Length: 423
Image (cartoon, rainbow, N blue to C red; front, side, top):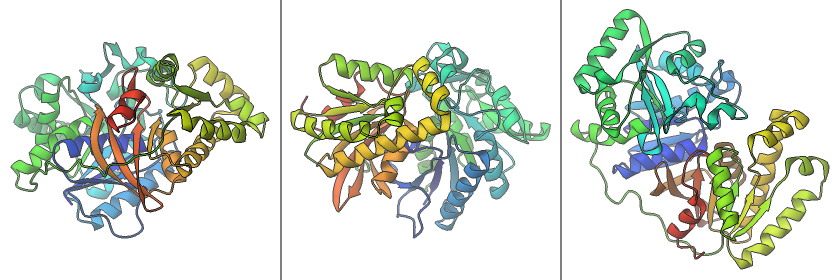
């Protein structure tokens, strides 16, 4: 193994795994820390569900993952978080980065969520979502990790006991050697985490080349774009053009949407406007009426005979806030995740073999409910979202685990068409 990746949610794991596979790196994603031997691959991505859990729990999970990757011989560790730097003043990015740096004896690491192909860029330490500062984007209303400050140095510093510095774009634009010199200067100044600017893929390639020999990289998926070529230049990797092939599948298809991001709201609206079957899960009805989930399950299974069905709990921010006020934030989230996982399990048992899941927390709940332990990574549907393949009761099952913020308005239909589903 060359690279061991610790991802803080399931969609983020498939995002970075897809980036590596696209550059010819044989990559396997495992669900949680495996109890037995690691799969044989150039890169192994461990998908955790640690983005929004208590910081101490996130640290413990991440250190368990690190030990498993080290035991398998990983040359480098990559801590993968969201391209919108989802976190709170308490963590979890800073505490996990601190713990990994301590365990690895790392004296410096970059922090770079940039993913220009999906409109996430960092300039002078400020994160942009398209043309908007992070704090002006829809992330300001995120129900669990509202991002109200675009200055990543300022966001990260309260989360870590290390000093945070800036690796600015004018330095990055001068190439890998200039980046290494700036990291040396930051070390001398007492900084140990460097927020790195990146406004284009060329910047990601530069950062990857400059950091490929460091014990730890912390980033979104973007920096992974440059690691396979950096490893190949070092003679560690022979890229494999067939690394993204999956076993063909047939049968019904379905979509499960739990994310309440603006992008997923638009995707649900687009699916409904196109006349496709859509069933809504209502958290308040779910909490008050024990028959809501069984009735929805029956409707979803009956609708499969007419074509792909969408089951969604997606709602706009004021509705989500109202539900949280009445049920409690954690209770509302757990209630919806459990119900959507139950529905996904019922759909797969009924023959669904191509399943799109929108939302990191929802993807984690669904994959765990299906008992999946590994995913092979296939071709990309859009930047950051590949098709993946698991094994359910001995048969291949295709899953598209989508971050809530990713994909265009017609993503659900686009994904299913690429998987051979007629709409």
